[in-house]
Length: 286
Image 1 (cartoon, rainbow, N blue to C red):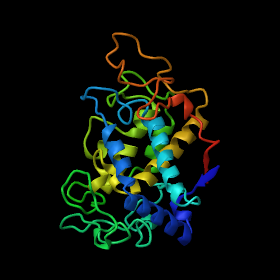
Image 2: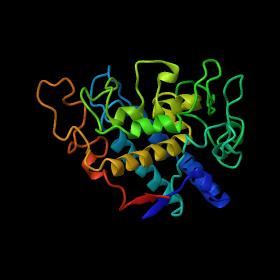
Image 3: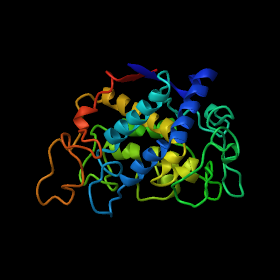
């Protein structure tokens, strides 16, 4: 049993150990495996095949398992390391502690969005982007998207998602307008501020946090640890609202073979959503 802490409560030593473990995974070449896996299972509504990671009910359990695998990889480097979480409703500015020089580094420069500060800056020589949306080898960020401003989600917006009484609903994709899963994942038909919660955070950070290769930016893990914590809080608030669909979708349903039900395996692990609904035997949140 280990504890995931709010990043603002980490000691200097805990920050240093987390960063060192992440850099060691990068040095070993293991970090790229996580980027590649997330890219592979980012399957949109309009694409064929099973949607495991996004735009589907399994968004939350899939990322719980993904995050746990990453955390275990970090712990093979340093047993004391856990993944901290970033509460973006509170630490919601470029001056927040996670963007400090001794932790994740700050925003990208205006000319090319290249991150110039912190341990993941290209100029330190320890963090080269090997897969992503551009051919440049440096990490990019574009806080708040100044050309078309976007803000981080507020406590009120998060609370609105928490009030949802069902987990998900048909058609089990990015277009569903009710249910906690898409309220927190954040797909809408609007633009800019129309993006909600999880998706809006990716857009606020910008740069490599946009798109399927978003784990290229280490803040990805802190963001998803908070999403995981939010899911835990929602489960506690709505104990009778379980994961749906509970059963494999019927023949003829356009989402059959695409949306994963409670006891169908999530690739690539062969782990079912039912197996990761309760994390409390593995880790807790402070």
